[in-house]
Length: 150
Image (cartoon, rainbow, N blue to C red; front, side, top):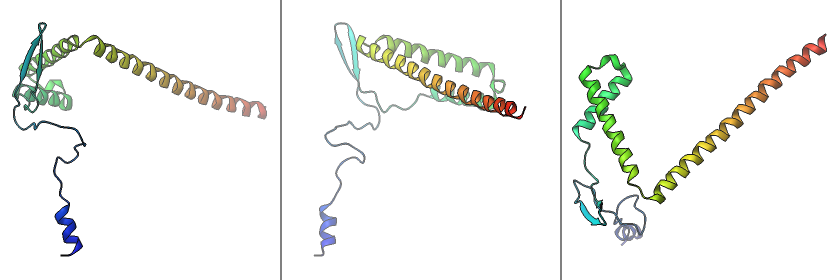
């Protein structure tokens, strides 16, 4: 038996490509079971991954793409109403889900948002001051050149 044959017989991959050691995951093929537990009148669920997008959501995204590429004048009144209604429903659901977060999650979300805004402001101020200095330096060089000629 050749050594290359031994190596090919010994090495085999058992697992999911890209999976990290020590982590487990459930298969997400098809609809998963949904487990609901009620503790102190709060409903917690698990599962639910693997569901395809609903036809209404797909239709709304198609209408949105048409409106973005061809302009809103390319859409009918019914398409615009359906698209607007879908976006409003999605926004209200996101808003409601945010309100269901616990205090720690809300704190972290607002802290990260504020920190991001502050850092963006700092960077914008640095760039703006650099551009102003660069522009003024160019003006001063021109003024100095004309003063030296005169």
